Every structure is written in C-alpha cells, then in structure tokens.
Image (cartoon, rainbow, N blue to C red):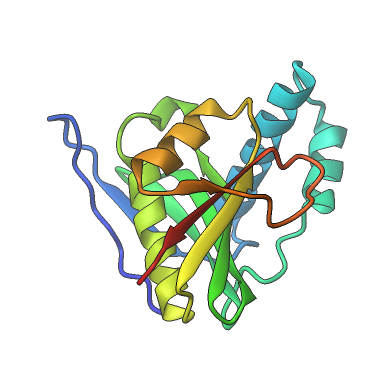
Length: 173
C-alpha cells in the first residue's frame, strides 16, 4: 500500500502536514494512540485517566487489521512533529472503517484532521473500499463536526460498540 504524503497549508499560516503510513507499533504511533485513549477516556469519565487505565484501555481497544492487506495506520506530522494519527480497516470487501482518528489538541484547527481523512480515504480506495464508515460519541463534538465538514453523513447504527452513539458513512467512489 502506498499512501502518498500530504502537505497542507491552512489559514495563511505555513503549517505543513505530512501524513504517511506507519506501523501501529512505531514509537510515534504508540505515543499518539495512548494520547488518543487518554483523551477519549478522560472526556467520557470526566476526569484525568491514570497511567494504569491508559495501559488497560489501549489493550481493550486492539489495533488488529490496521496493516496491509486489511488496513492501514497513518501518522500525521505537523512541521515534522507527530501530532495526529488514524487507522482504516476493511469490514468487508467494499466497506472500510475509520478508527483511532486523533489530532493533538495543540494542533487542532490547522488542517491536520483534513489531511488525516484524505490519507485514510486514499488508503481505503487502495484497499478496494467503495465506502467508509465510522462510529463516534456524542461528546466528541469536534470529531462529529470534522466528519460532517468532509462529506460524512449520519447513518443508522452498523455496529453495537459500547461507546458508539453516532454512525457516519461516506462514499469513496
């Protein structure tokens, strides 16, 4: 799988985003995955999470399928610093699912989410997907707004995940 690096400049400020495939076990990916879990768990529980909870939570949300030939994991770097990540995996031969989409709060509003989505959608097309789906929670308002801005429409539930409250889909064809 060959996801081309994407560079994005936004808001008149030169912020170069480069998004490239990376093993989910790479140091940057592991740090970003932990930050993702700490944020979503902390927002859900409305408190800071402990180190033990992060370790347990990361284990409870596995990363299987996020490597070729069934998926891809990407890391976004803003001006060279790892600041975003996301994964895509096939649910069936024509349907892919986004997961673990995260932009460091310090980099939100700089085009990182758009760059991640573009790279993940390109990876989905390379996997043969005709559509991409995702689920998210009500409290993750920034994520829901990002998906809506990029053409994702709410759909009926396609899974019964314990934290899934909103489901989205976008055509890739």
